[in-house]
Structures are given as structure tokens and as C-alpha cells.
Amino acid sequence: MAFIVTSRYPVQYEESLNTVIIQEAIRYNKLLIVIKSSLNELLKALKGLVVMSESLEKMTLSLFSNIVPTMWASKAYPSLKPLAAWVTDLKARVAFLNTWVDNGIPPVFWISGFYFPQAFLTGTLQNFARKYVVSIDGISFSFKVLPTPPVKKPSDGCCIYGLFIEGARWNYTKAILDESNPKELYTDMPVVWLVPEENHKRPDGVYECPVYKTLTRAGTLSTTGHSTNYVLAIEVPSQKSEPHWIKRGVALICALDY
Ligand SMILES: *[C@@H]1O[C@H](CO)[C@@H](O)[C@H](O)[C@H]1NC(C)=O
Image 1: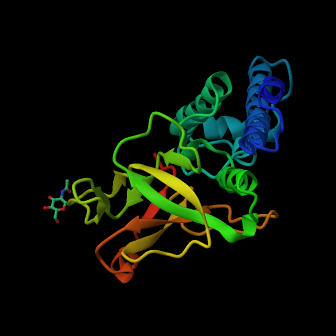
Image 2: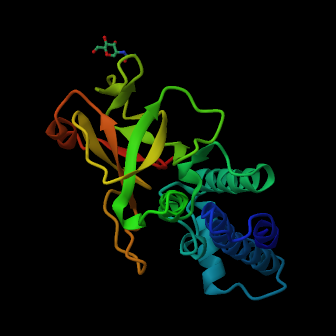
């Protein structure tokens, strides 16, 4: 897939997202290759054609227990999903990239589909910096929550969907963060438009809501200096003070554990 991607989306000064999709395709391909080759090995071992190694035996145990084999998880993005849901999620991620490859840059991005969402966010900022010939260091995102998904890609910034709100919900009538209904742990966050802005100042009446890849709040710093789990903070309109939501641990999550 990476070859097709590179020919259709060549590295371009004006479109940093071409680099993003190439990198994403390479990462997912590596994972798919590990899955395919280990399953082939396992099939051979089960047929008695090769010796069942310790790592294959561990993998078999995981497969029977609905656990993602370590061999796969170590090549994958963070995820807390059990194996069956993990596979469904992986297929959706690959489908997201394939749709992008076939149809061009989508009007709305499934943020949960990125192996490495930080690179996508940086690419979006970089597009803005190059278009308006400004330094990327002075740019950050402002945020607009959209009641309905846009049909066209905005001329600046990008729209994302797929986030879940943990511990609160979006009030569509008032367009603010609101209390969850009883027994409702996770709710859907509407599309958010990330709008690059120079010298962005945090507006009043927002909760700076952290976005995490998984429900594990803590992340470790990777070699690239990015957290393995924290993605960014989104300023969500709210009439309540920040401590109100902080006390409830309200966060946005890219992928749940089921
Ligand atoms: C939105 O908030 C208003 C005022 O607090 C409330 O009356 C209404 O039920 C909420 N609507 C939804 C859809 O949550």
C-alpha cells in the first residue's frame, strides 16, 4: 500500500498531510505484516510442519483468551480493547486510510483512526504556517464544536470526529458541556473543527479538556518527546468553572476499552 500512497500523495510543501498518510500507511503495514506472518507460522506449527516455539505458544494462548498477542501489541498503537474488538478497530483504521487514499483528503478525519495523531495535528499546523508564511511556533489551535459534520474540508485547519466524552455530555441545544445522564459513562462528542490561529489566547467560558488515546490516563514519554497517550487539550465551551469538570475527571477519549 505504501507505494501506491507515495505515488498518489507525493511529499509536497503545500500539503503536509501527504507525509502524514504515507507515514501512517508504513506503520499500519508493518503491523499487518507481523500479524500475517505470525498467523502463517502458527498455522504451520499447528499442522506440525514447524516446531511450536515459545512465542507461538504464547500467541495461541492469547488468541484463545481474547487477548491481543504481545507480539502484535508491541507493534501497535496503544489500545485497551480485547482481541475481537481490537481486530474490528484495526479493520476500521485500515478502512479509514484506504478511503483517504482512494477518495482524497477527507472533509472530516476520524481522529481515532490515526496510529500517531500528533503527527496529523502538527501537519495541520504546518499547512497553515506555510500557507500564510508564518512561524509554526507561534501557531496553536482554537476550537469550534460543530453541530453537524461539514460536507467540505474547511480551507484552514481540520475537522475531527470519533471522540468520546468521559463523565459528561454535550448539550446540543445550548452548545456547552453538560452533566451526563445517570449511568451514562461515555457519550459522543460532536465534530470539532481545529482552527489554527496565531498568538491564540484561551477564551473565557471553556474547559481545557485533555484528549487521551485510551482510558489509561497516564502515558509515558516516547523517544520523540510525545506522550504515548495524551494527544492535546481541546477548549470545550462550558458555563461551569474548570474545577467542576476537573473534579469529575472529565476527558475526551479516542478509543474505549470495548
Ligand atoms: C441543555 O441544557 C438545558 C439548560 O440547562 C436543559 O434544559 C436541556 O434539557 C439540555 N438539553 C439537552 C439536549 O441536553
